View (cartoon, rainbow, N blue to C red):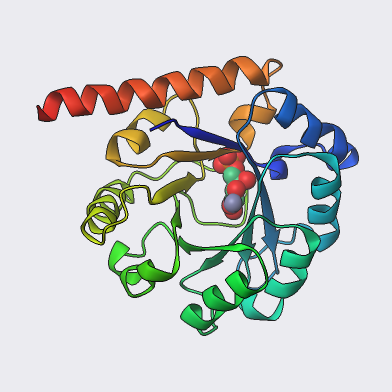
Length: 230
Ligand code: DX5
Ligand code: ZN
């Protein structure tokens, strides 16, 4: 398993987004994470499809687009057309979750399911056959720079087991919120393999070195836990 690292554009200077997108790519990021907020599902606003279009024009990196929306079904097509690679919708949103995941695939994007920090992994199980990725929040969504919550770690472990039992050994489990050099290992050890980080990457003068350190810490944690098992 090669750890996948995603800088979150939310932590970048909004006056220089194109530069921040290029900086993520030049620093060796695997994908870029873009946070969309509707001011209702979360008490904050960010940006919309125009920024996904900007990112699509600016980088070759896959775009992971996180829709913190009450009604992601109403906007999924626009974000897919704007160039989202993956569209991540919350299981707690007020739409037909299964139908929306299927619609996202029809629109030409990869569908993924997002779980809030205190939502049990069992909420994802009815939709597992529709997705190849789950995003587990490790903070309550809405703001960058919050403190990592450890509560989801056992749920990540259980979701990893459930995905394996469902014949999906390559299922992606992404974590988002408070991920940094102090918290990434616990997530990797629990079974996460994709790591979103805003503050911890954009605040560093050498983002490339921090991404390399993240990969090393995640790989070491997986290696140590598989030794402990054998
Ligand atoms: C929070 C967003 C995150 C945010 C993470 O609602 O989903 O993607 O950018 O920021 P950090 O890494 O600063 O916690
Ligand atoms: Zn996010």
